[in-house]
Amino acid sequence: MITKLDTLEQEIIRCRKCPRLVAWREEVARVKRRAYMDWDYWGKPVPGFGDPQARLLILGLAPAAHGANRTGRMFTGDGSGDFFIPALYRAGFANQPKSKKRDDGLKLIDCWLTASARCAPPANKPTTEELNNCRPWLEAELALLPNIQGVVLLGKIALDSLLKLPGYSGIAKKDVPFAHGAFYRPEGMPWILCTYHPSMQNTQTGRLTVEMFDQIWQKARELLV
Image (cartoon, rainbow, N blue to C red):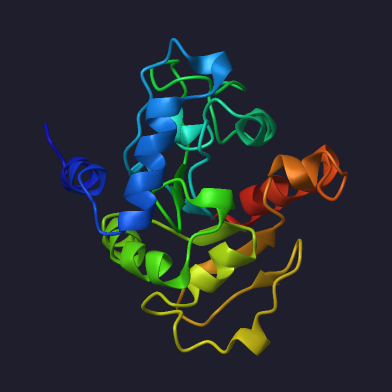
């Protein structure tokens, strides 16, 4: 049976709103990285995925050029995914610790993974306009996830994106500053838990350790009711 989330996924995949991102994602898919020359790159917007009945929403930044832009699934086939998915597995939010390709059997449990921008941006930096163009997809996605109790935000841009969504847009940024482990419970809305993004820049420098990341997911687990 085709669900509304399935229909939304196909609409997202067809999106060509941002000329710069369309050109970049398709160029990356055409040129490829030497290690992946035998891959048929995805090269399109990357939809969210997970459990439609999820109580936990996970909001990140954007697909990686040779990760999700290659495999077609967020945090799949790159160093960030190699750090992120095992943490979800240890906390019981994933059925396996590996995320290599779309058909590798990974299933998320009680969580839905999505992003502020759906296309891989040059230098991992989408513009404000591009993030604004992408926001309706996130709004539509959230409207189809009826059981969300809380949101884990992967990085400050994810927090900024959340604060522009209905229900959160009335919150002043100064009242919810970003910090690793910062927790907020806005009245009438799903709670907010922040973490540094599991980028290789953060994990390889020790800014975000395995222990720090595991504490986030354990807290998220404890907060769900």
